[in-house]
Image 1: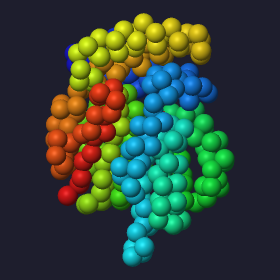
Image 2: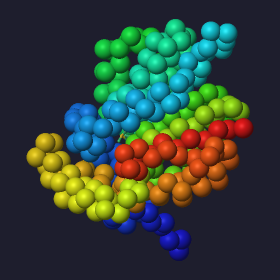
Image 3: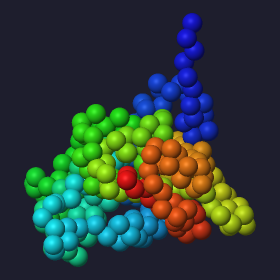
Image 4: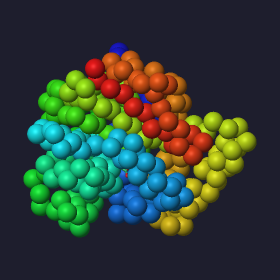
Length: 265
Ligand SMILES: C[S@@+](CC[C@H](N)C(=O)[O-])C[C@H]1O[C@@H](n2cnc3c(N)ncnc32)[C@H](O)[C@@H]1O
């Protein structure tokens, strides 16, 4: 008889086939107060990290270009990165043509994003669309079709992270950029000690008090711990086929988060 494969869901071992459903449950549960959750998880610093990612990428149609860019923000949730990239392109390069696809596996997160979109300059614009997709396969996105692929705080939730990276490579055009912002591993042992104490004792408690949802926060903390360290993840990006410039990542706030970059040559 064929044995079902297992994987981790936080610190629990679960069947691979069940993980997607469990992750979906977590994000459906936090969707309505997702922004609060992000602020709690990162002590508000996620806003600065996201701003830094957007400025680092510095995307937008340059004045001598006639080709709008096709952005894809995977695990895009409530749309912070998507709106930020479009804003950056518009405000810095007068780019009112580039398009954005926000893909997420969770319809509750997507509908929070679509609701939020109504308060942006992109409300009811054909330049932005929200689609329900599993980032591991992205069956609705053709090969070689995107210029920039971003994913923020999403990929650690994938059942098969390497499949997600392989798919990023597939959907990007040659010359396209892959950029991932994710919680990572603190590079200073003393600081890591305090960070672990904060994460494992305070975060689930705050989840309980703020959102009456201890379990989701417990999962989020554990999933950060289970995510590969910076060097290992850079190796996985290389394995997907990307050229990784330099060491391939930038640590943010001592490695609490990191930005990894890959280029499809
Ligand atoms: C922590 S949220 C991040 C949302 C947003 N990128 C941000 O930075 O605010 C993680 C998101 O990943 C999505 N997600 C988890 N697994 C996924 C998968 N396999 N494919 C696509 N999205 C996924 C969740 O539904 C959730 O919206």
